[in-house]
Length: 351
Image (cartoon, rainbow, N blue to C red; front, side):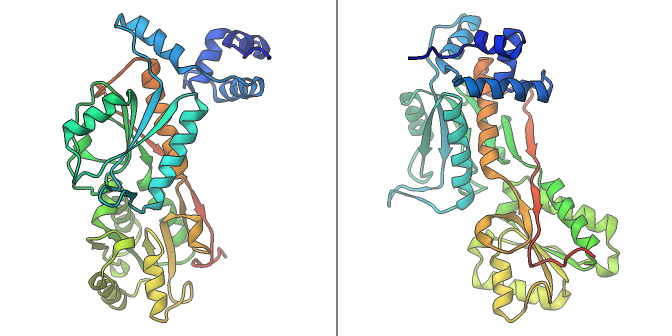
């Protein structure tokens, strides 16, 4: 059996110091990206896999605390129906989960899904389960309801949240830069000649994204669109996938009253509704999905790589485990990722 590569053997092959290899394998920003990627490629080629137990042991030695093995990163999900023993359907949640799982296992950690129905489990019950499963790293996925209260003692965990939830308190978070994303698609729309740009948003989606979508739309509108051609933002109560019949009536009234030549929305439900009335995109209006996914088909939108969000969440947790930092940080940070625009049939082509 061949001997597993070590940091020393990787350093020798890469022609660098062991400390440089250590920084590269931890994705440290202290290294140039070119150096970091080169060392990681060499390590992968040599078959290197980090040992989280060794990392945890060193952290505990530095802290002078009794030894406790760190082997598991938990992914806490409240999109669960306890009565029927099934996950609630949300495609984006599954992508966060998959990205986190793949990254945790790639780094050598055990990954543990933790699914709780908030109508059933109490704070004490959740804390007992986390302790019994030896959870030390914890990723908090977006809550089932943005208004839900979820407060437990974070002190034992290296913790990060996906999205914006005040109830989690002052902890590190990771999400997409939705303000920047909105400005990108609005710049593209305006460059294609669209002048009456409308935005159909909703309370739940805005809460999850820190209200950055609507903030960007209103800022762009006030700065770039004459008052006479401004279309008022339509904010509905339900998430787009759960629009009620009354909310679709509101969309119809809004469309006929303001006649937008381009519509921003999150998914493709709004487009399907308007096309069911006989309208066609892009002939009658352009359409851009802000939470685009491949299953929408030939629809223009902004692709947020949600698997990458989950992976970056794991990186943040692992970095805190390496540093033996638990609980609420003194200076919490927000990591915002950039996606890419997807060209498709629902938008005029550039001239």
